[in-house]
Image (cartoon, rainbow, N blue to C red; front, side):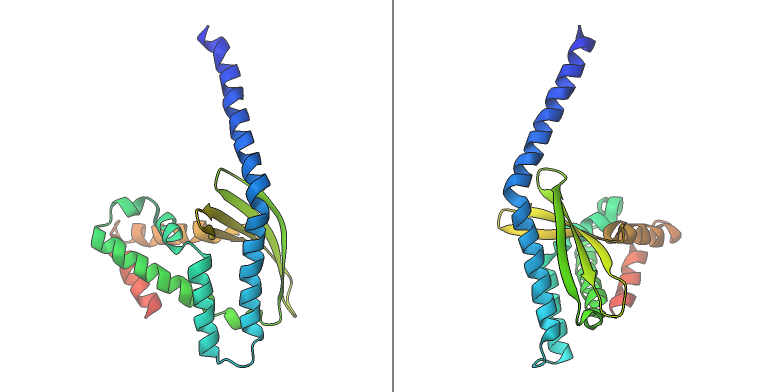
Length: 201
């Protein structure tokens, strides 16, 4: 009796999940695409400006990163299971260092994209709050880059929680790198903090 009921119940649960995703898609995919296009347009507009210094351009890029990316969520995901082994003080220092590392790493190459164009493609919902948006970055004198953005819906808008370049997730790659640093040093979380301190100066 129980086994005969399990298949219909599974189908019902699947149907409910699919309806939920369709509802998100209908209501929010356009908003997520608009959010991403606006963010890219702002970044490319900063690069095109001739009335600001390189330092000011970097400051503007960092502001866009802070507002457009959920660095807290990304930082915690990247740390994985080691978040649970860290003390409160270690977590606080890690999050501060992680944010500085991301801002330094991505804005150091900011000027390389001058003259580029950005095309937003299809978007699809993958759960109740996350969407994946395809895009192409067209760079002068270089092959175009296929970039997918995982965008999460918030009560007050959208934020990016992962970026995949040519199919490679930046968050997963960073997670593997951090885990490797900790594992090579006997599972010591402090080893990762030392590495990050060196990276951000």
